Length: 168
Image 1: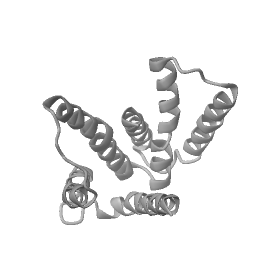
Image 2: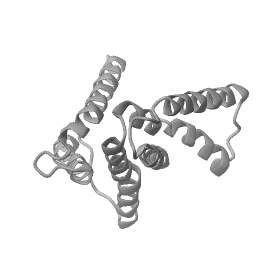
Image 3: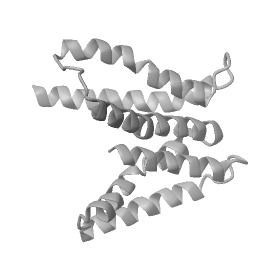
Image 4: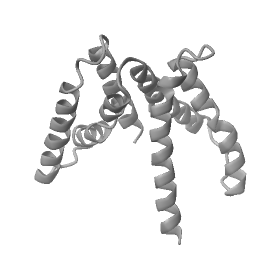
């Protein structure tokens, strides 16, 4: 039963994330909304939810000063920064292209673990990296004519993926 709950939560999270990325560009310019405002709201509105969930799940929320420092750094770099950068990219380029580029983060996780932690990359992993990178490059090449800010938006989406990889 626990496994099914986990699978259901993953499905809901994936759908929600997809909806957020698709709806975000529609909000820009509406009532003063912009990528920064949306990122701030998205990150701030989760706090009351966490404040309700922690006691319900009997999870203590006591942190040392050192832990609080790390939580703030990881929260800003690994959560707020990727959300902000992805929102900016979504304002510049097509949703599908921006989210595809953002989801290159597993490539950076694998490369980071190899360079930082000296993990061995196997031949199947090299093949997966090559296929993923080739697919993303082909996807980007097919969408270059959509926006005058395409290159900048693509770079921002890529940096959002790198920032997200830092927290994984």
